[in-house]
Length: 72
Image (cartoon, rainbow, N blue to C red):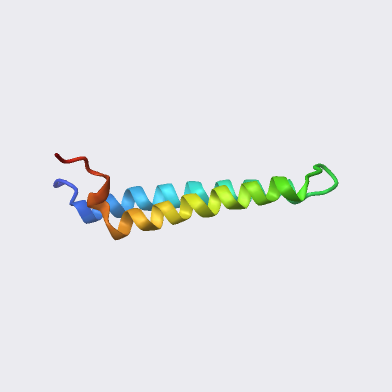
């Protein structure tokens, strides 16, 4: 078997990471069960803000991937 290309590696790693994120979101959804959990609106707002901010950061990193590389 030949060496894995960058595209192949991206696909392999991305599929695994996205699946992990989806599983985590589904797990987070389980917290909505009011028979088991109780929460305050402020707590939910902090959760959604943190998630949305990190998704925004991720999207931006794909727009300019070189911006994270330090150069003098």
